[in-house]
Amino acid sequence: MSEMTRNAEFLNKVYANAQMASESIAMIAQKVQDKNLLSDLNTQHQQYTAITSKATTELSNENQFPKEKNALAQTAAWGGIQMNTLFDKTPDHIAEIMIQGSVMGIIDMTRTIKQYGDVPQNIKALGYELVTVEENNVQRMKNYLG
Image (cartoon, rainbow, N blue to C red; front, side, top):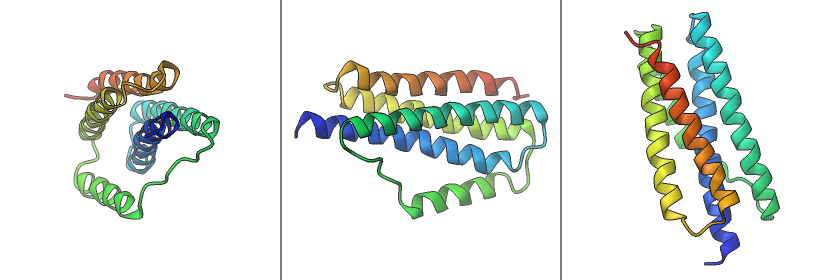
């Protein structure tokens, strides 16, 4: 497999991870009534959108386009959020959902970084940036637990 292909695969994984987070936040934000939590979610949304934009730019440098995830995955995410927030829309519960999502993102991206250890550091840096955003978001969401 060529280096260009590995680079594009890695960038697509970063893109997909950040895009899923961004879309999930957009769905969850509609359920939030706490102004502080909504502000924090909007900040997170901007961070994930910035990463998808950077991944798109890097993919363009590789003469590639981001691969969109399938409709089934989007529908499953939407359904999960609807069920999770049907009876409990408290900041505590929303924070728990967000923490769980971020932890899954940290695990997925950390594995991806290790699996694609051969990609150039400037490309791998975007994966590390995503992990840092996820970790910071976990810390921020902890303020709403309790």
